Length: 113
Length: 114
Image (cartoon, rainbow over all chains, first blue to last red; front, side):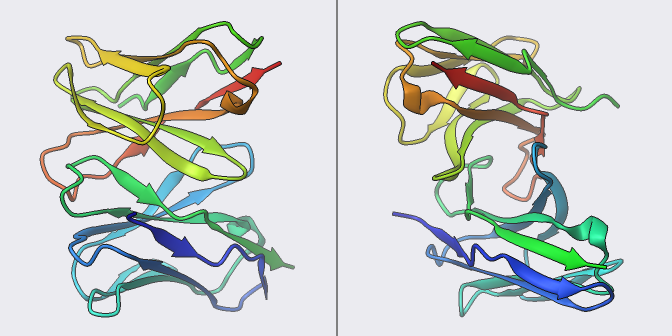
């Protein structure tokens, strides 16, 4: 069973702090990794994608990938109350086809003013 | 460019009925994937269509089926509805030229089975 694991949270951080969200995956052959944000009652929207080991930065967001440890994380700097949402880690696992994402159950982030 | 659209947005059905949901992908996208989202199970992959062919299928019973038309629009059908089929059904489209392709989600169809 190919799985993606996330801490369900909630993860509570004060405004302006760094939020760190983590994800592990079971299939060592996985090549593509995505972070989606989902507000309550809405559909997921893409925040970051990462394919190579290391860090990838986009504005206040940094995705980190460590394929040896089968671990991917998302850092949100200068967290804002508007960042309060559920963050979904998604992995396109090896041999599952181009467009088959396996999702974690998400981590709820709460940013307090 | 218009995003992924799904119709209807909300649906109420009773047990035993069947339902058809529709998804129009982003223009130029040839892949459409369907997901079911429930509070308990999270987002689960149903199936993916590319150029009118089902390429991948998740672990769902045969009551769940789908198809894709030549214009890449897709429909999914659920027959003999059960209470447990109440969920948010999401479709996502992508160019699907490689595994790195991003999937873009539609707003979803919220199905309630009574």
